[in-house]
Length: 212
Image: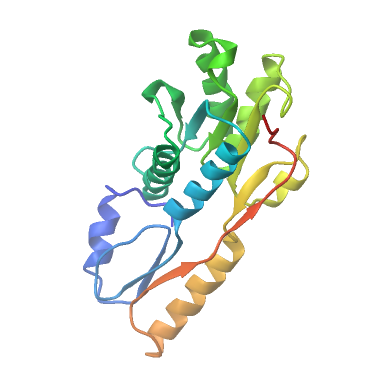
C-alpha cells in the first residue's frame, strides 16, 4: 500500500510468481490483486457536495503528485466542476505530500498571493490535509465554516472530534485492510484468482461546510 505509480517495486510485483495484493493502486500482473475504492467517483461526489452548497471558488489541497489516488481524485474534482460549468485554475491547487503541516503552510502561502475572496471552500484529498488546512485558516484569523468551508477524505475517527467536525468521504480503511488480507489468503489457498475488488464509500456530512 502507499505505492507511487513510478515506484520500481511495482515492476517487481507485476512479475511476481507469488500471490500479491495491493491497496489503492493497480499493478498489472497474473498474480496481483487490488483492493480499492472508486476514487474518481468519490471525489466527484465530494466536489459536487460543495457545489450543491453554493461554492464556486474552490481550492484543492492536493496529495502526493505521483500517487495514483491523488491523480484519480483530481480527475473527480475536474469532472464535477466541468459538469457544472466551473473551472479549477492551476493556482487554486495546493500541492503537498499528504502532510498536515504542508497543508497548514500551503494555505497560508496561498493567501499571501490571493485575496480573501478568491476562495470559499477547500477541497482536501485527505482528512489530515483538512486538519492542516483548518489550522492554517485559524492561524490567519479565519473561522471554519463561517469564513471558509473545508472537506476531507478518508473517514478517520479523529474527524469526529476536530473543531469543527469535518465533512469527509469515509472509505472504510479498516474494511480495506480486512478484504485485502482475506483476498490474499484465498489466493494462497487457490480459492480465488487475481482480481480487482472495489469497495463502496460513504459521504459523511458534519459541521465544516457552510451553505452560501
